[in-house]
Image (cartoon, rainbow, N blue to C red; front, top):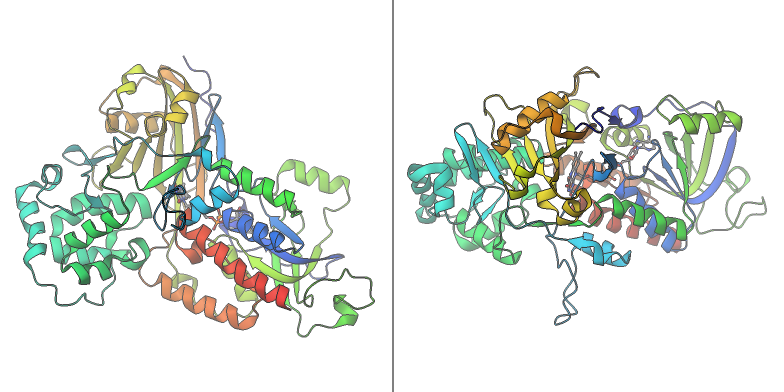
Length: 554
Ligand SMILES: Cc1cc2nc3c(=O)[nH]c(=O)nc-3n(C[C@H](O)[C@H](O)[C@H](O)COP(=O)(O)OP(=O)(O)OC[C@H]3O[C@@H](n4cnc5c(N)ncnc54)[C@H](O)[C@@H]3O)c2cc1C
């Protein structure tokens, strides 16, 4: 029976897709604070929380009506599901405190979760692991692999996918002397040279394309597998390096289990962060886009209301160096915000906020535009990777045949599978026991992701019929449209393939320039940290510590 089949679209606001709106010429209202944080994704929330915990007054400006950015939620057929990020990488430290070794460090996400007091929500995915759909059939992802690179090329589960020929070619990696790791950094080149084309095409490419939205030839090994090339030098082979990284991570479990989630969904992290921000007094300005940030030429007590002068401005650490100008409410702000603003007479009133520090925590294109305005040489837009757009379809379906999880926790799709446009399917109720419990017996949540051309027309989105057909093919079943209890599509724009070769160097050049402008300016977020919550959370914390030290020292 169809309870709810209307496709809902949840789009990011225009400001996140395009450049920042033009700055209004003369702001009419000016307020002051210590730190302005631009962007309310996970990076912005961390920056706001850390600054507020350091005793600074913080205003966070977010162009949409909800916090979280790519960490988002929606309710489909009465079940609350993540409509963006749904897990986090567990590398870089422990997932839970080890009482036998209290000095052992937690990973960055686990540390944040512990600080927020929600560590009891941490859950591990079902260990059955995921499958791989190839043009000629499906097979479980081999166990001893990292991003599809086999640690044991002759293992049965690897041979099932690449055959004896491919396995023997891959095993040559063990016998070819590795005199030194070449300077090349593209993952595809390394895998092809050491293990051959079959490993690359049938194992590594589908996984890298699914996880990083790019072909391995374009992906920087240092960004996606930090430590791999060092381990290759140490171990003398690629497969040896993979095994040593698996051992370091302390995981020989099924592929895909190097992640964890939160019971109730990843969005509960955003809720906990936002609640903590409020506790520390962070002020939120929702539905407002920042149009420009400018640095005052020299702090002038007469005009800036410098702390400690007698102009009536509140005292605080350091001068009010920065002016952040908000765009007037525009069509991208929610209806409620526009109505509130109109009632308050604020519709046409540009607002400026003067502050001692600014954190740019936006997505990629807004961030580049704001920094370019500050005189940072951001290079040509064409030098940066092409932004990826992803449509994420969620299907809630009543079908007890799915109880046995025919494809484990989901399926990654290799290029060239006939008749399937989805690049990955997550059987979410099989992956996360908490979700299976929330859904109830016989009801399942399936999540399919689709790459979408950045310039595809708005209406051009995946339909319920198409998503259901893809899900059926990938799960090896014919799924019945009448069994669908709910369907929704979320469109994500501007989610870059940040792991591409050359990206790190461009980001480092950009950060070096911003550091020269002033230590009271920080740039945080996935586009500078590298895709994924673990990298983003670690970088946002680190950059904000530097900024708050500079501001409080002043
Ligand atoms: C579909 C999808 C699934 C993902 N799944 C996972 C996963 O399972 N695990 C994982 O680790 N990672 C995942 N990621 C990546 C991860 O979600 C991101 O790396 C991370 O959430 C980025 O956070 P951020 O704060 O840097 O940026 P964002 O989340 O992009 O936040 C930036 C915020 O800035 C706001 N903004 C932009 N411009 C302006 C402006 N001018 N003024 C005011 N506000 C502005 C935006 O509205 C947005 O809220 C996924 C990403 C996508 C798209």
